[in-house]
Image 1 (tube, rainbow, N blue to C red):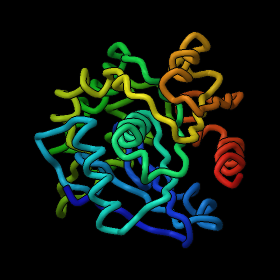
Image 2: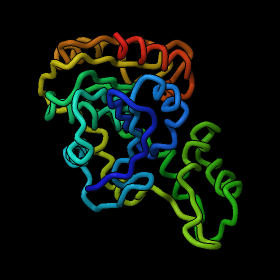
Image 3: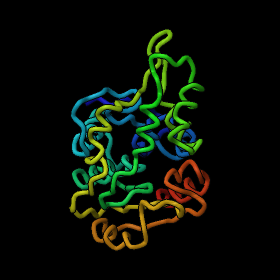
Image 4: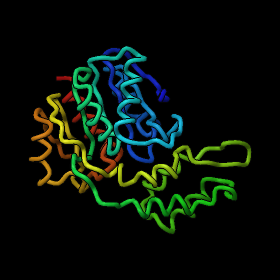
Length: 253
């Protein structure tokens, strides 16, 4: 699949893969900063953002999509950054195309499988009465019955757009993403990777626990883990300066 992407800066390519229910817009602020040093390529994964929808959805397919983009743009020696689901895509890509990667940055996701924990988000998404709402404010009010976090609501609301006059729609393919949730939460394949890798986790997140670190280091044999205090799963948004400092200090070595 040909993915939608946008570019900033020049130099060594740095590709950023967003997480579940996200898209490239979520990373614009960081991209502007990273573009002072790199050719930043912000990518919308399939069924997200401005990229096409498909009934087929898996980490293998998403990694293949990214590889196709690398081929189309003649990219090599890349720095690959992925958050959450995008981090799993990045790890899958590294397992298949290690020769293309200079450095890998995985943001607040481990290699293990995760139990279902998106029920309230899906309930909030389904609560939005798309045919009848006239403003995002109405969608926010409807989601509030299921989602307490203002940050999560604003994150989801970015996916709403005017498909045509008077008709609002989601940019994400909710039906397929919900259907494939168990696949999205599945563990990373047990294939060793030698690429220098940085795992960045939020101290208030439970996605990478202390007891997970040994298994991560056994699979990603040249890896290190940085913990950002006062941040949860959306560490890049909740502690933006600390996050960008950690990433750049690793990538610019």
